[in-house]
Image 1 (cartoon, rainbow, N blue to C red):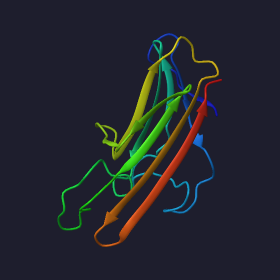
Image 2: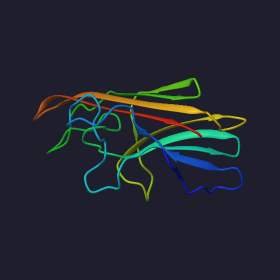
Image 3: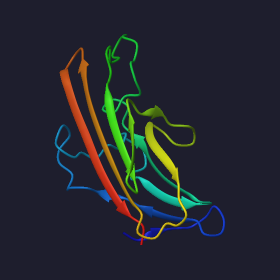
Length: 151
């Protein structure tokens, strides 16, 4: 895993996380969660100013919806739940649904942060699993899994 550009001040360090297992087809055990037409969804694991954080953006809202969506023409009537488990250095956070991304990012996102004294050897995992009923296609199941370790 090559580091990406630092930034955010002295001591800041970023790495791109990798899939925990190879990608499979949509609806498989580990799919590429990228929203069509968006930059690739690759989580950023970051250490800056005494904080370890991880964020996965550009999630396809059709497969990883941000909570319940009102029904309507072409809309998913009963989205979710999406269960996200994010672990950073042994601290786990469970989330019920992704959140809409904030511009300029697109799609939906998940993220978590914890205080830390140093980054060397820190690990992170993201497990995002969504099950919901699409009125046109029935039961939908999507999952994506990522891991990363700071050098």
